[in-house]
Amino acid sequence: MSAFRQTFTYHRSINWFPGHMARGIRQIKERLQRDVDLVVEFERLARRKRRLIVYNKADLADPAAEEPIRQAFTRQAHQSVVFTDANNNTNVDVVLQHAADAARQSAQRLARTTVMVVGMPNVGKSSIINALRRQGLGRGKAAVTGAQPGVTRTVAGTVKVLDNPEVHLLDTPGVMIPHIEDPITSLKVAVTGGIRDHLADEEMMADYLLFRLNQLGNAGYTTVLGLESPTDDVHRLLMHVAARIGAIRRGGEVDLSAAAMFFLRKYRDGRFGRLTLDDVNASTIAQHLGHK
Ligand SMILES: Nc1nc2c(ncn2[C@@H]2O[C@H](COP(=O)(O)OP(=O)(O)OP(=O)(O)O)[C@@H](O)[C@H]2O)c(=O)[nH]1
Image (cartoon, rainbow, N blue to C red; front, side, top):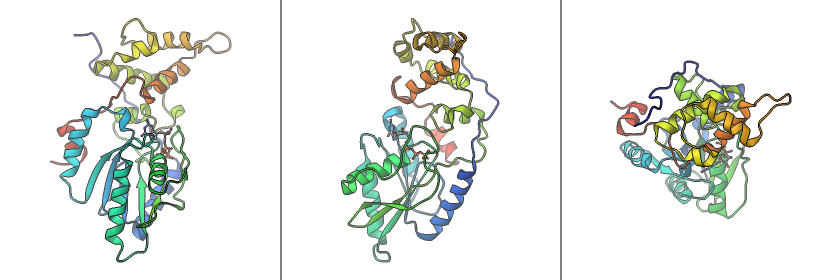
């Protein structure tokens, strides 16, 4: 139907594994062995423990991706999956219920239950903890949140989220695997805000986002950015955005990085609609989970 690119070539994997993440992984493992009863996971990190997999920022994702994910996870024992929006408290009560259930099951042997929250940077772990505390205790913010990845830097104290049974949550720093093998996967993580922006090439991220939007037939960006028609040419798009937002450096040079960040922020704020960069279907999930 269109002359849009069908493939995207990118060879350099963007990796971000600063010291605090290596330390974070060590601390997570140590606490897992010590006193954690339930793991609320945004990634698959913990094995053997009872796990609740949280797909947060569900308000930004394609709702059609939920069913195949739900089906794949519910086939596995000792783990459940929930789709949440921490900013609007969507399904936060479901997470709380899981925590309370885990607490009741361990009530015979322990006075209080510790739930560890783990996952990649910027997925909303601290936001979920605050939402749980709001819902469970009617109290305000306890964990620091931020739009940049890498806000929580260490496994520190616990935050109480429920009184009866007594449940405490343990926030952890967002951790990455030390090396993302597939360059396109690393680009997706960067586009969604999981890697410090200055470490990735902003124009490359913008180009990948544009490629994906066009592939998905999502032309919402034309309206948001005031473009006359969809384009596959990122330079044209960024020049247009730069002119629109006045992204000009001293000396008159066009600031394409600022234009790219503007475009990426619109995407991260959900202005182009709910979309998922991964191709999510039964077979891609089975592959991701290592099922045969
Ligand atoms: N749209 C949307 N934004 C969210 C949601 N949850 C969190 N955010 C935003 O995502 C950003 C990161 O949230 P945090 O809670 O700091 O994320 P984190 O996983 O603790 O981050 P690190 O400390 O880097 O590991 C913040 O700007 C939040 O407002 C959500 O469900 N929907």
